[in-house]
Length: 143
Image (tube, rainbow, N blue to C red; front, side, top):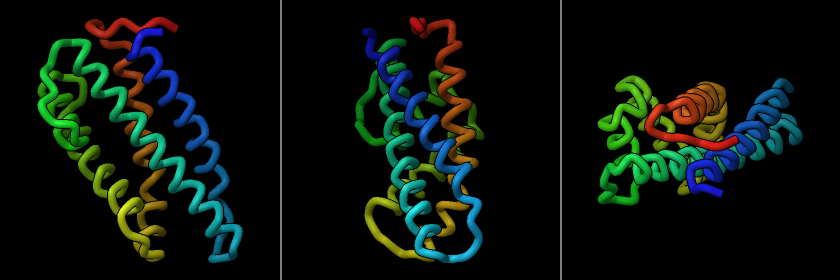
């Protein structure tokens, strides 16, 4: 299976589980099950964001854009330069990267709650990028 097709499949499956978890976040309050659901949401967000950047990097390689750094911020900037994402999406990806880094490198419950509230918009961004890449004329994916 082609690298991009595989990366797209992984991302789409990750986004499906993230979407399911977003739908489960409707319990109000700070009950233990709410914290557990939020932690699950964060974990699925982390996996989905990682899959998004693996797809972006695979696409950049496919279209011949030199990837000189492995960082996600650099990959996002290169994706914008290659017209895979818009300037607004680039800025939104920078916010996604910051939230992803915060969930991995430190645990602050208040900050985690704030990030969890932003995950639905991050989900929409990742979904939009996946769809656009799948339809991009220079990136042929087989389904």
